[in-house]
Each structure stands twice: as structure tokens, then as C-alpha cells.
Length: 162
Image (cartoon, one colour):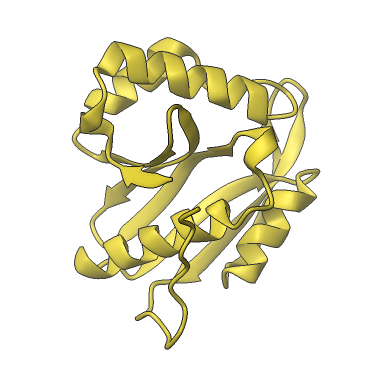
């Protein structure tokens, strides 16, 4: 596995791969269309952390606004889940946030998505609010979670090499 950035791929190809992975990973299908991914890839406020071997197995999409980083989209291929990749990507985002002098990270997660909530809680996010009927298809509340950006702790780095 290796961590690559979005410029490693042609935008059209990357948008298709992210859409496909997202469609396979989310219970209710991809929250974004292929065109939304493509538009986001070109945005100067967007960034992607991409974990790939031969194919993309996980990605984390974020936007930085001043001193805050918002996670917009995060998916791991179903067959690659529970291997530490989620923690690895969140840890790398924290390191990037430190270098960009961000103060906190924020995200929304479906109320029914316990696996994602557990991942975030294990990575020091905390629930700060609930947004009623935030999601559609199906309509569902979202939990707003946040984490302060902080320096890496001793022995925190994760090696995911095979």
C-alpha cells in the first residue's frame, strides 16, 4: 500500500475510481456523483489522501477553510476494512493539518453508521451536535464530530506495509 495524492491520476479517471469505490463502500450508495467528484478534484480548497496498491482501496476527501479542516468524504473498500487504513488516513490528515496550522477537524456522519462513529471516536473525535434530517436517500440525522489537531504522540505512527 502507498499513500498518493490526487495529482497522481488523471482527473476523469480519478473521479470514476472514487465514485466506484464510494458506491461500493457506502450502504446507501455514493453520496456524490462522478461529476461532483470531478468538480471537487479541481477545487483549490480540496485535498485527497488516497491509499492505493494496484487500485484505490481508500480515500479521504477534505477541504481546508482557514484554520479548520472539514472531512467531506471518506471511504474504504469493503474487503479492505478493519485493516487500520482508516486510522492511517486520519493520522496522515492530522499531520497535514499540523503543517497547515489548522486548529481542528470536523465532519458529519450518519446516525446509523456505527462503524464510522467508532473509528472517529477511537481517533479522538467527539460528538458536538446533531443535525436533524441532514442526509437524504434515506432521510437521516447526522452527528457532527470534531477533533482538535495535535502533535503526534510517541509510538503513534502506523506501518501498513505488507
